[in-house]
Image (cartoon, rainbow, N blue to C red; front, side):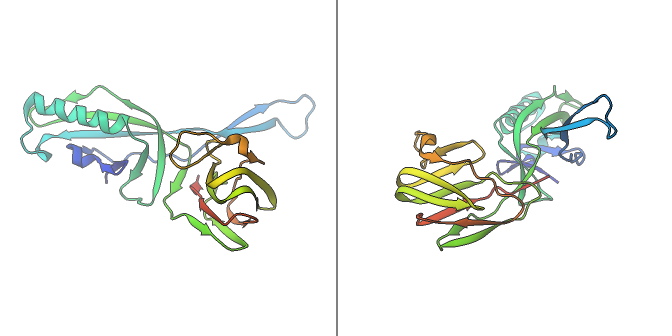
Length: 239
């Protein structure tokens, strides 16, 4: 098994997993308050989902790289590991391709050399988004109305790229949204709660009239209205 960060597996850096890490499950964040006189126990308030942590124990194996030996080779591998881990955004387990978790923080513990010319060990802890996300092709809607299916177990905060010009009205699960002053297209990012246009640096939030759409598990109805096309990148989440 390998840990793959942004498409790069750990063995390509000269490190191997010592053992398969524990795979955590997302946990709710709940606050309980005792209510005097209540016959139904405490008042429970759901406040969201907690981040999860995965700790990976790696063994440094210089022989995976030709020409690396001794303390210099050992240090070279550590530098590669640091760059690989600290700059990462997506974590994938090699035995679960197609699903990924988003990396929020990384802690690399002090490396412990054993036989310095042969091996050493280092522990890396990843703080991750609570949910798994599935790689999937965007859904392209061009008809008068269409259903988009969320296969996950959690409401999705999608990217909706809406094509057309001028004022565009469309509906998501019966709720009307309006985009103003559209030139070619605008992308609604429900995750970041912002509206963008391609790769330019402009923010067009004021051109959206309506709430950022959320797609619950199962079928979701999207009516194009005056849009010529809507492309849905669901970013489907699993607990």
